[in-house]
Image (tube, rainbow, N blue to C red; front, side, top):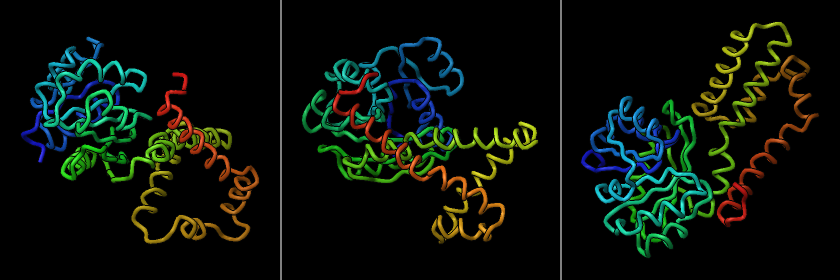
Length: 275
């Protein structure tokens, strides 16, 4: 589906480079068929050496020579980027945006009606092939375009198709979600230190425990609440720990966290957010 396609990644930051690395590692697209653009010459030189892709400062040229364009620029830079490439984007190309809060309608208004636009919200665990991405089609996108986008992001984890109205919620949950878990791991490490463990040991146990719990959720046919009950003996150690979490209203805190990130995404979409 993708091996003969030429792909331009506009923005060589973390996520742009992660996507390129995943595609190359999993032999979805060859390095010679990928061009990464960025304003940072040092960054481009590093990517050229590490990934063996083409690199460029010239966004219009890279877009003109490609079949698929991945827009990996910051939301506040999107309008300027779209204006720069608008003359070389036509209906033969597929435009995939991973910018938080930027709607397909916004992109279509800048590039032209009928342009095939796909909006994606990935996350950083894609760096180790464990990403979670949601894909939503714009008005001009074809079913085959959605399949192609899913194939790209399946190369760095899993991807699912959703209605675009759900993308802000996806951003709040899985797009920002890795940071929530990193914070929890930090807290577990600090707790380990406080109770006498070394930092290395606390980190090893905390990260493996979180990984194991996630894998168990994925592989088991039981709901998370059932799995929690399985390890919670009445008045045992787990029970004592969970009692504190419930008292501190950890569930409410997590829900409020996702809602705040979701609302921020909505603000970005409306152009009301300060960046």
